[in-house]
Length: 184
Image 1 (spheres, one colour):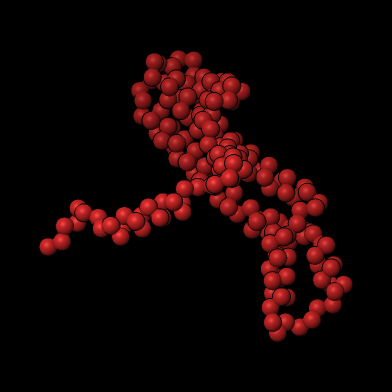
Image 2 (cartoon, one colour):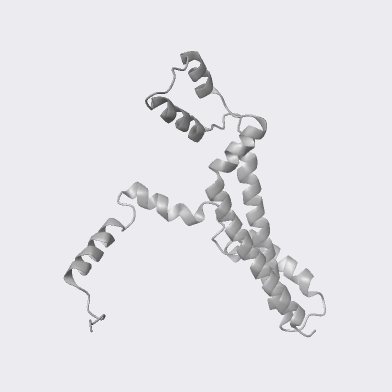
């Protein structure tokens, strides 16, 4: 029977080589960019880290708890308020992301243009008149095509925002259940 507790020298060398290849960004610029990833929309920061939002949480918590709150009720109301403010913050960030892109008259569909250029560089592609190609490269998407372009190019950020939103909804739901189960 083979001893599974011991790791072979080959496996150790492979693990070390993999670790060296995956230690993250190497340049100062890359490290700085990676450090900002979680703060892109500031959605990873707790609500209470922002003094303005903290005040909103306290105000909403007092409204939820009501004037005749017992000792436990304000804490539970604060959990509901934090989740609600977080939810609003995520939805505002999503709305800002999309409206900024829609309002930008120069918003470009660079991914689509890159795909077209790559296809033109392949062999056996019929020649395209240069003026048509220049017109296409200088065009910007309009109307529904612009929205579709924005949604496809911002999909990764929108998915991240959806995860923050689901987390806030789940926290709010749990907090409301706990609040409702507490005797007043």
